Length: 112
Image (tube, rainbow, N blue to C red; front, top):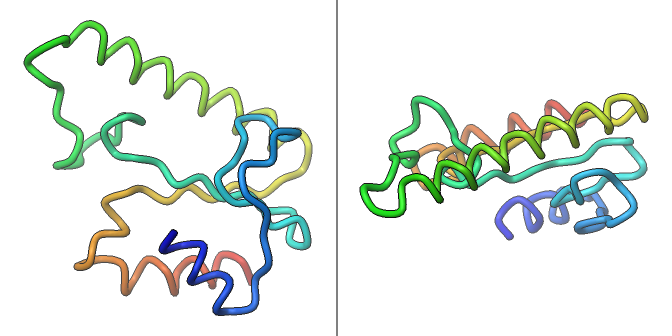
């Protein structure tokens, strides 16, 4: 919601979870031929991140799920690039209060 509200406040109109696109991107900006994925650090395996810690219980199931998500992300990004889309990935940890002040303006620079 944070990214969506920020984009809307800055005049960027978008669609959400377009099922016609590979990977159903979180935010689609058709005018800019850009998609934005907002990844949770844990479920998408953000390496070297304090929010990605392998759990001590159900470890095999979690690792299979995380590796599956990573593979699906890679496949979706490859397909989107072939279709000419620009891809932006924003990690959950970058949207925490201490870092969001840098992340969102950087997003605007990537869009312009």
